[in-house]
Image (cartoon, rainbow, N blue to C red; front, side, top):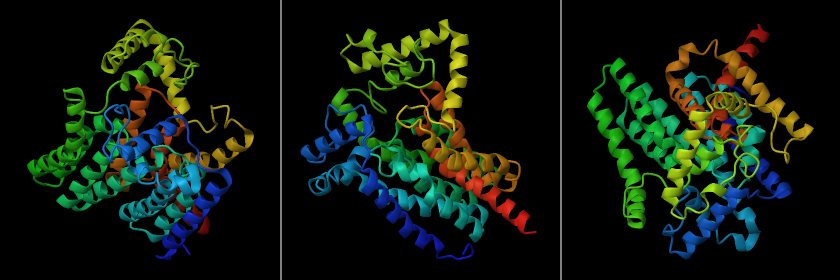
Length: 394
């Protein structure tokens, strides 16, 4: 079975069936920010598919994708918005399978990766959740696939597609924007090491990025009459949530970890954003020891096997987490000792993981925010699992 080149297609069919079954029994899960995405999606439809001027807090891709399924809500209710997530989550299985095949050139290993990711509980759960996770992960790993191919073959079309999909992913979650220079540096490094021309790499990377982001920047300028690279009124909001005297856990849940009462009188979003940044920085400067302790709590929270939210802090949820993420984590750590021959191609995902952890240490941490690196962990863990399998068979 593991040698079969057709196994992945059977797994895609199984994946759709499993996800639809979960949707049938549990129903779509619209969390707090998911409710906001649906509001924006309906506003987009009512605004002739133009992004409304008063909705600049969120990145546009997720509500735009949901907006194409607004009509379906009349037939199956809120479950309509889980359909694009199910489709993209299933497509991600195939993308991760291709990544594993590209890196290790091993059919068995690629199939092991595909099997694990097909039945991985967290990815299946989020495929029926009305959030950004599934859409973000799809574009993220699609970009990784082409980034790995560029490092491997140095084809400019692969570089262009990496930048295109990673920038689209930036418009799904703005956190990617700060990562762009690091990935450009990575490609310049490998280009230099392999005696490739550096100028075309810089020009293609910059050109595709600018072309993809420009429509968003133009509409932001029309709304604010100034250059706004992402959105306004939200980064400071999250920064204050992660760095304030109430936050003792590393999370950012109001009113447990944060209160915004001192900023409510500031009606201008950009000014409120600035004030929240300033207050967070002042708290860090005045409480460096508390902040360092809080950073360790964020790191622990991000990679925790057990849940923090009371809604999910049940023994059976934690048991599922242990036998999925917990085992993947152990295999991932084990594999790190043997992965050196493939590090060149894995470097793009290692870099992303390092930067992602850094961003969430600056802001707030949650098990949910770890999800984008879990397919990468599964890819590496699969390598360790195959090593153990071959060792046992000897």
